[in-house]
Image (cartoon, rainbow, N blue to C red; front, side, top):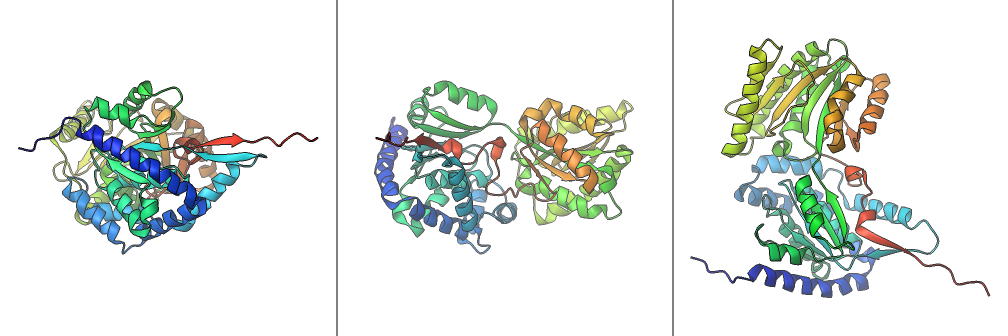
Length: 432
């Protein structure tokens, strides 16, 4: 039996905070260009398709009960496609120029930034610490319990390139019930937090009024397909949709929680596209096998399947297509009512006759809308884009690209860097 010191977590937190005090001076002395050069080199190494860091992440994540190796490697390949060192430099320089456009303005880093990671997808765990460090703020990260691997590997990869700069990133973990540890962690001028809305609200209530909270709450994404886009080669589109569903097993805000076919004869479009998506998901079962799921999630999937079967038995034109066990599910709905999506390769396809009907269908979740994968011919695309952006979408992309946002994507509709720094203005001395 392992005996733990009662205050072990707090002592580790205190020691990490002390080391970051030293690292703050290092970042300041090295300067923005030097730090950015190191972080850009780190991203370039992660972006390399032969990167040993990718391989280690995939293997260690699976060993920790996360995604299968093939699924992680496929997600990293797509997600890191445009996350290069040059893209990081361009993003930082562009946003810095925009923030400092006024006379006498200065970019003032926080003395420390503490990042509370949530979820199981590695991408935010790779990007968030890098962005804060690029602002010359030392970073303390608490890994998500569902991904204890990514943040420590990122820290190690930075230290390999530059041990001094790497000292500005500390990674800690402590039990969720450790209230004293959490209070100590939240003692920072800037907190970045990801999680469910209830988690964000609970954290906000514990913070001082002077603390900057950069919050990323619950978000979801959808697919929208104009009926005219469902052509004879429907499998080309279906494979792209299936990839969006399969990557990260629908565990992130960029995974489609529903798909809407818009236009006359939308129901017929749902039937054609749904059958093709089911075929594509079955094919992906072989090349990108799904994660193992626990009983609670399996029960949710079975429940939603049963609810769809009941609607079908009641006379609704609802159909259910399923893979082995709970590996994937496609539900062809007869209406566009919003219904729960349990994730893990579960997709509903719903018909809507007009774009106004699409607005009504998405109204219940508009405040949580993140990305939309849109398929539509040019004349219709512009109209649908405007409607989706007005509903709250912060990103519109093509099918098959939902898990590949640009590095400078304004997540949740906010600037990437502005929340992570303070802007001061120094007025010129009076003219004598």
